[in-house]
Image 1 (cartoon, one colour):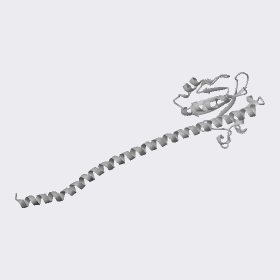
Image 2 (image 1 turned 120 degrees about the vertical axis):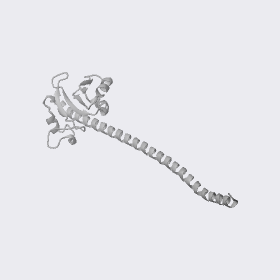
Image 3 (image 1 turned 90 degrees about the horizontal axis):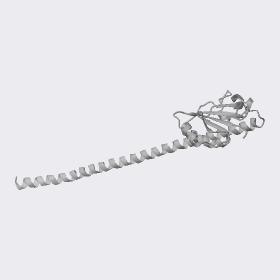
Image 4 (image 1 turned 30 degrees about the vertical axis):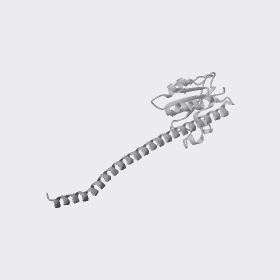
Length: 200
């Protein structure tokens, strides 16, 4: 190879070098862009997951508070309307619904029935506790297990006896049995809560 050919090959190599550098920089920049994009997507996914969890928890708390308010409303109205006159024995669900004991927004339009927020049919009927027809039993059905314990603890001071899924969690004249409550609420399906209201 003569000097001219050597010179020409060096010139060709030098001309290619900027293109090779540009290609190397491009590959490096594409690698960083991929990493940055991946990190951004990861951060977005984490933020979305946190927002979904917060929303679900907020919805659950709102549902618990609404149910506590509605159950307390029914209990205080039933006591005020029928307890002072000693007329628990004459009360039926139809009478209680028509009499406004149950909040109006829970009443099924055109009927004498009422459903709670979970779609369960609310029933109100007299029962015997220490005497004949001395309490009204309010059945609050289809309560999701993740709200059961919070609802019961929120309303327990208004009621003489409470059962959850058939298990007594508050006996007459006793405190709420927290262990029994958590066991009863720890079910695979929604549970029915039965609350006995009457003059203490």
